[in-house]
Image (cartoon, rainbow, N blue to C red; front, side, top):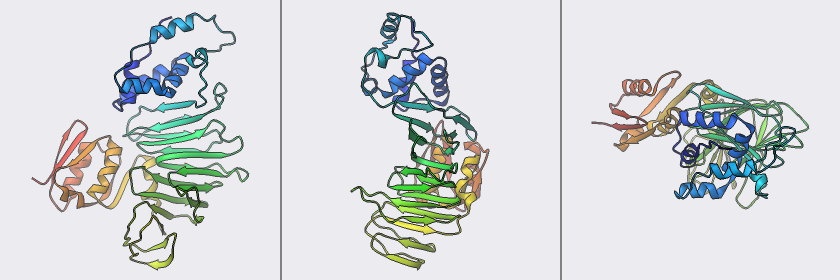
Length: 369
């Protein structure tokens, strides 16, 4: 039995070099048979394979895998033998990596069902740059993932508890179940809800973790590195909680600030603090916060430096500032179906300060000359 395992695609996947079309090819191969699905799961889980690929020490072992499978009698009742079974692996983690190759602005919808062949582990959903993904969990909770964001939850989800972990940005419409609160872990914070809609933005490389409540009620608790939980904070609709990771912070908007050491009732400028801080903001415009899930990027009085981070994820590009002062240019507006060329031309024409841009494949260079 000759297995046509697309090792070149796995290599590009592990090296972070896989394109949208290649991700779609890998997804088609994975879904073409239950055997391919099992092989896919094994490769994704095998740390040794990944390390060998990254070190350029991996050879195509498809023939060897085929010989091992051929040596076993054809299974009854449509049971597929995986490499994990052949080698009696004791690995308990079963990870499903769903790479979604779709056009920007559209959503791929995934209905997650119970996988009886996976005894333990986690389900993992990733939405690459330039794409957005919608997931329907087993309890009918709906989750939208923004570009470069991921969702992880145990296979036992909804049996006794409903717990998920996210990295990046996600919008939730939680199915109501008073007996099973819905818990979201996003880096240093935990969000607890019973049935509501809200947005979380928690990219690992950004200084803020933002939670915006659209409808219902929820609470937020900080999770310290020492394992201790902070004070439980409750949000009302159209309120945002910002957890700032930086060691010093000044806020110049009307806020209510709660820090681990003090409570400042109302202040237009908060003092500099020496530890992470929580900021509560009221009367948030929900359209600005969550319209990304409808394929619309909205920005209000954002510096080019801040906007560039969003544009890189939105269009799957890398923006280079050849002149740092361009980072301080401010913009307000929105993009819906604009191409990357149209978006940057609109920014150039609307800017009160002139700049030029050059697009070279996925790299965009900005300068003032």
